[in-house]
Amino acid sequence: MSRGTSKLLEASDQLDVLNERLASQRVAVVEKSAACEALLKEIAVATQRTEDKKTLAEEKGVEAEEQSNAIELEKVQLSIQA
Image (cartoon, rainbow, N blue to C red; front, side, top):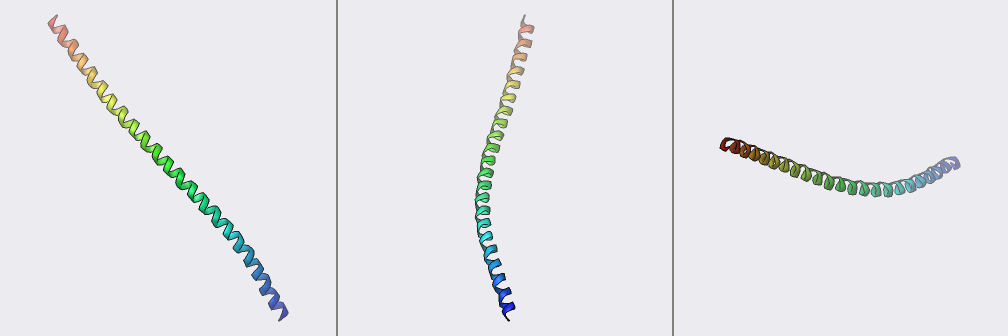
């Protein structure tokens, strides 16, 4: 019976060690999860900024094309008048 009690005490000690390790790992997981969430938010903000800049660049491109077409039209009209 002493041997069975000894095994139970040993298992209990091992369980205590494992529970301590689990507790510290839980803390690490929570901290790393928070860091990941913060990083994901930064990525989302940067992505939105990039999309906004892309949209603006596309709008400017269309505007430049329209201006170029207007200039070409004026050149044609001036050449016809001359």
